[in-house]
Length: 361
Image (cartoon, rainbow, N blue to C red):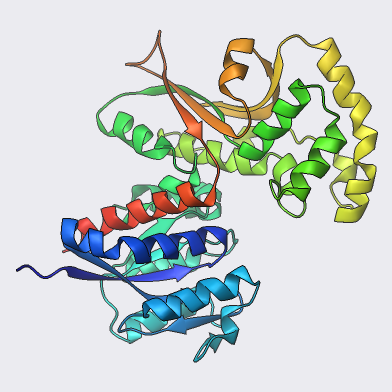
């Protein structure tokens, strides 16, 4: 009877996606061990408040307690034997010093400043799985290692559960040449645009979306378009275009004068934009959708009027990505499906972990 290969897993970030990932991993471990001979064993969990560590492996009861604490908005610092005030870089160094080998480091934060820890992980011989888009969308001089290294995976960064990055890698790796990419890449903005199409008032849509948890607590995180821009830049770089963010024109759905307001002030002033959006809808033919369009020279991320046929596909939180390539010219290659949700995003992270584990000697 064969023995499963033990792969330590270091999880940085225990928010919505991190919790879903741990739950899925706990449920799937037996199946992955039987089917693939791989045992993915969490050894470190960390959030901004602290970390729980056991090089021998964290038990299912410890994982369940950590998930429960996070659901109740409690930091890991309050868990038994937790260690506070450790950065991601500290944790990678700790793992190396305590003999943790062949680990997979999972970054499910949304944090700036993770690049040093992730580069240290690669230097240590660990694999890296990213749901965090920021290290991939930073300056190319810093980000290029993640695109070129064979021990890095980041399917969850674009399209949640859609195989966008896998498809793009397949095209490039098999010698196709990508000419242009277009996508609707935000479930939140898809919901907003569908509601505008239905005649609802802009400020009311944003208030409703915020109340339902569709937006970040500060809706400008979504309305700025920067999250869509990061996704577009990741695809561009996978396509072989070594672009930086300044190659994209990103049009937010609010004026620059509202950028530095407090959240409460911003929400109070939102109705001032209602007449502008009503005028835009009345003066322009087509249906509104927030789209990214990019090629080797750069691109745009903005609100556009699209055809009724395309808009019908992009109702609600649906994401869509279309590739025009040397092979797919007259009829482009398109992916369509749910582009949001912590369960599908976490599943993409888990699949990336399995992919790395299967290539570990």
